[in-house]
Length: 323
Ligand code: UDP
Image (tube, rainbow, N blue to C red; front, side, top):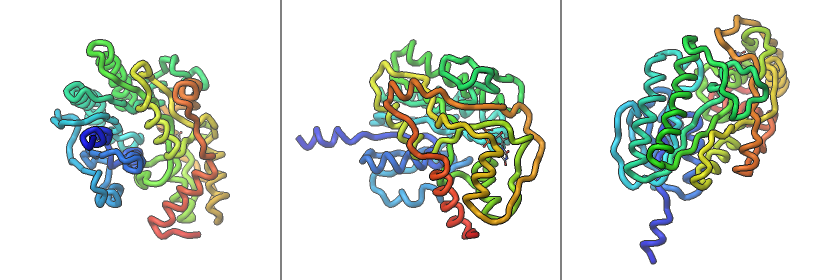
């Protein structure tokens, strides 16, 4: 009897568990009584992020780079969230970014095979590149420049989708692929150059908000708790549901609109200042989430203003910045 009860506690490996999405996912899994092994090379993840979980007896940290094979036993589920994901981080060392996506996929898939574990790959809306179909359904093959500055991330993630899909077909492994759209919230890295963290920190410091290009490009911003909920729901699906499935918030905003909302929420007297647009910056992005709604019974619950208020509070406390 006791043996059966013990078997019900699942052990989950979260590769990239000390990053923004990883930390929030680890916390949610611990709340659901999973045993969580957080694997990270601390390239963008931080010890500060995971410090509050270190006291939990169900939480273990292993410093490891997924470009190197790893051998662990008794793993039931694997989430692969290990890759620098913001343009300035993934462009710092483009070859390392590709290796992380491609070699990392092979190493974690082999680990999943040995453990007969389910494995979930976090792919990205970047597989759609600068999309010519709008909003983007999973059936769209995308518009990616294979030699541009974003390619190391986009093509690495596209290749990882291919590798995961072939492990499903060749080995019958239980794989899941989520395509994550822009996500924001507490524990974002302050220095990763993301539009939400940049704007919030600038507004809190009473600096003008740095809008790249005209600010007419669009993004659809998903609050972190919604995304984590979607990932856990996808992992819980049966074997037939391998995806890819878009996870994102379908409410679309121009970058100027985002700037105005953040200025209004933070208060103060900041304005916007224009900078040049990065090469290959997608002009529009919005997920079609029909599949997630039907297969996962999932859709985002947190509206942009509510999510931004929580994010502003997080950064204001972190840096003692209060207007
Ligand atoms: N962006 C901006 N100001 C910033 C940072 C980003 O105007 O300080 C723009 C960026 O050019 C892009 C959008 O905001 O059009 C989202 O950028 P982010 O780096 O957050 O994500 P991604 O480009 O990967 O969607």
